[in-house]
Picture 1 (cartoon, rainbow, N blue to C red):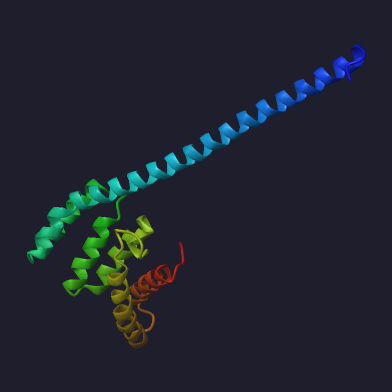
Picture 2: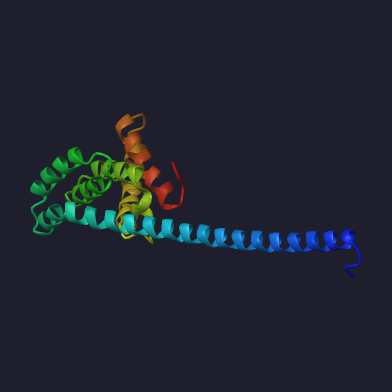
Length: 180
């Protein structure tokens, strides 16, 4: 087997190649494990950030919810106006405003507020989201499309009514899974 120098050199190169291949395989398998761990860590971080955001939203808008439950809708709307100005990129204020306005009988204004809230955060039409207000939006759309359709048919060319109908249709499309 090891008869001369050439045989010894070939066997040593073969052994070195096998050892190098084994080392490379070990290094790469460890790197893939790290990548999977990093992906799990990022997923965990995103989930924690989302839950923290939901809790922060609930805490910020808790006074409005209390005023609304007590039947003090005017004060709730004033507080909401303040919070909407303070947090303009957060859709929850618009959603609450739409809910209160609808309960007060201002269906078109409620639709406008809900459209703003859904545009800022689509989680409000997602069934699986803790922020979901899908049932509220669905009821408003069903009732609003009937009313707005009749009013637009009775007053063709009325831009305000057409804009209102357009808002109800936007919400309907978002409920159906459409995006902007």
